[in-house]
Amino acid sequence: MNPVYPVETAFIIDDSEVDLFVQKKFIEMRKFAGQVVTFSSPVQALEILRASKAGDVPELIFLDLNMPLLNGFEFLDRVREISTDVFGQMKVVILTSSNSSADHERAMSFNNVIRFISKPLTVQGLDDLKLVIEQG
Image (cartoon, rainbow, N blue to C red; front, side, top):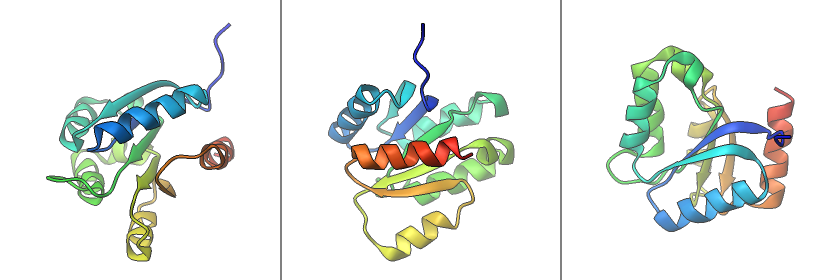
């Protein structure tokens, strides 16, 4: 019998390999997602989403804000430019070291951003996120 996960597929987009490794292991250990796909480059994740059809979008994306070349806000803007269908289906959790209220406000201005969480992920953070997802 397969366990039921709150999320079948989650992407983690973060330029820190250490953060990617730790976050992925934590999500797997907590049985939060059936499949966790990591990207150290937001450009790579953007290419995957560009090739996606509306039904193939991961259920949840954990997105860092502070990345070189393409920050989290630019990533969200680019996805929206590529496909409003894909953008509309994405649920995004900002997972960042930023504690800026301006970043928080800007992130929450995107309709599909459901949470703004300061790193690192915690049991409480994932439990709260699970409740948000279950409530739809």
